Length: 110
Ligand code: 5GP
Ligand code: ZN
Image 1: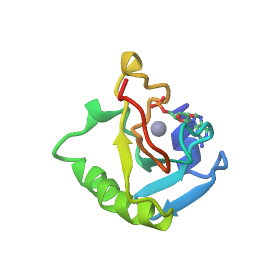
Image 2: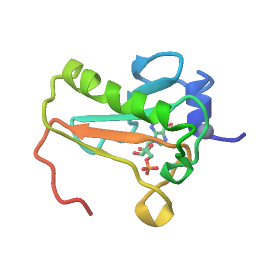
Image 3: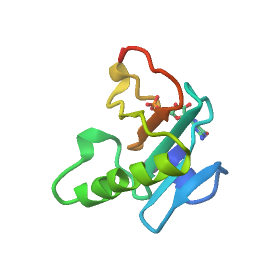
Image 4: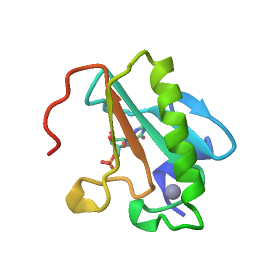
């Protein structure tokens, strides 16, 4: 499948990693919108939030259990967690990813 984040998960395209295990990867966004801007992805391909089901939600829970640990490592206590689902919502890479954004006072949601 021609998917940028599958290629990053496979190591075919380099990324600046902040966390990795057998199921998930977190790496710095290439175009950060705040001092901390990290993307969390499952290594298995899901197109977005719309693809989350009871059968695969364990990896999503694992991402959410990891986010506070990575945030602490990066020295932030206040942050925003967001996932754009669909082009109208601003999704540009169609592999599920959760943005961790912080390190500054954040503006409005849209
Ligand atoms: P979306 O717009 O789909 O919610 O988020 C996609 C994010 O991926 C954007 O914030 C964009 O800057 C980031 N991004 C796109 N291509 C790359 C890349 O090759 N490497 C990294 N690290 N981030 C990328
Ligand atoms: Zn993918």
